[in-house]
Image (cartoon, rainbow, N blue to C red; front, side):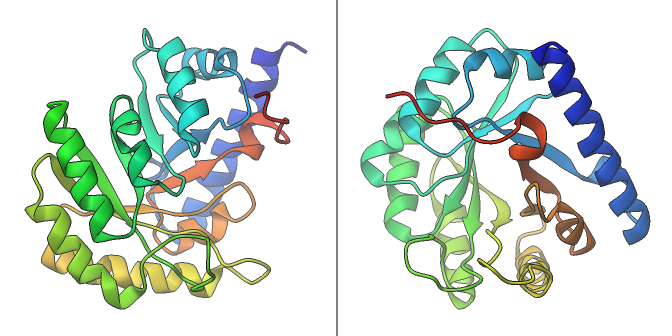
Length: 231
């Protein structure tokens, strides 16, 4: 089986899982977008996924993402940055990414706004919410979401897109996803356009769909086990 055949089969399987989960939750599969997380995989896989109809691609390390985006600049793709973002990497990330899923502090909002304005680009920003408050995983506490939302909407070059979260480690993700759904609902009451709920990955996308996920960040189920990064 060719690599393209392998990816095509994986994509069909992921879409079948989404359809089944949406049916159980009383939702339409059209409400859910798949973002292919291609970290550690080559640009060639991005091209194959694009040929299969995948248009949303995500990375979590700027060094790898910048090179891959440059190699695939001829493709009609939307690049998402989903990793923790340091302010010294902002200008590079803004040069290719259209959606930042990991906005979790005012200082980052300021840096993104400055870089987006200088580059004459518009960025969609998702607030990363910490659902377990584990140090080093990123995210703002739930009670800090309103303040960060206000900062994003007031910043030039930025648009508030919604919320993002990573499931707690070694725990049932359902309660955390339900909490994120509540946070999203509260946010949309103030900012109706902030509809995105970016949560759910290869192992827990069904639970995420039940709780209203609109964007699934899928890596392993699409591309297979992670490869070692060649530096």
